[in-house]
Length: 501
Image (tube, rainbow, N blue to C red; front, side):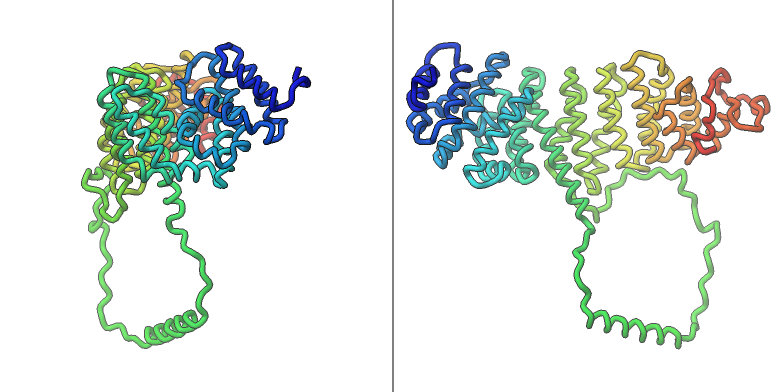
């Protein structure tokens, strides 16, 4: 049939079918894309604008979760990518209509739609002789202002946050300077609709999480470049002058006669032990730089969702807190922020959450303890350890898979806590006594790593427990008094060698 028509005529026939009310649009679009891909530009010049307008109008419609709509959308994007080179520089007139749908589709749950949307953006960027990120950056005012207007609208659709997510992910850290107002609007939405519209709040939290992740990436990049001095060739004259100065100074030092008495060395009583001194919650070091205000604002506002009923909201809030703490690393605002969010984080361990929420909470707690170090000592003892102790006392590695995964994660988190936060003697002993309960026929790597860390810092306690369990050569367990460890525990062979004892 295609042989009976010229490309121009066939394209006109397909275009008429495209605007028909038929349900064969996907097939028509497929044929139109094939014709456009093979025909010369002049053969498609008469129908190209109309076909392109159809695709643009379709992209502007609200997305439908129906599978047939997704296939239709995928074919429309394919046609757009084919027609854009034929439209040429005139594509700029369609940019305001295309940008929002394309940015939204880049965050689609369908990998095929995501890839096709990225491909269309790349082809559009080629027409403007720039990259995708630069093209979006050039239009960032239009994107952010348009989204802000939609967020402030009475009827708010969650897709506006998908558009913002796509923009931040594609532009990167250069878009952060434009985010203040739209983040403020988003936080207002979270507060206003927290208990009314779960879908909108979920989209808002996803956007805020991506913003804090981008801020953290920016802070990491700045931190990595800090201290890298530019290497320059030394000035030979300056080098010679410095060498002469050093020689003169050395000769003058040799001619000096010591007339002042040698100061007395301090005795051991002049030093006070600081092992048990708890770091105070005073204001942080003023010499450290200030933290990113955007990350601070988002974190303090989002932490309330750690108490939400929705597991999805809790998980996004945990990710946002995690990103924010990374963004504030090495700043004066880190410790005050940790002090604010710590009670909310620990509270997640006291709830019967979905196991993946508890695992995410352990990730954040591990990061907080790493950054807070000795400043977290009292908080770990009074707030965190009671929850971990309850979990370890009431669980075993023979439980169902989700519970077993939680135990392994708690052991892994405790290993990092032990490494970064000093423990008092009583807590260190309790940790050792509890973790040996999990010895079985197979030694879990999380358990070994924790005991290795305990051995480095509290080796005498680990040795005493293993000796009581009969693991230490030439030591009879009966010669050791009762230390509260069940002798029915059977550690694996070679455990002392694993731990370096």
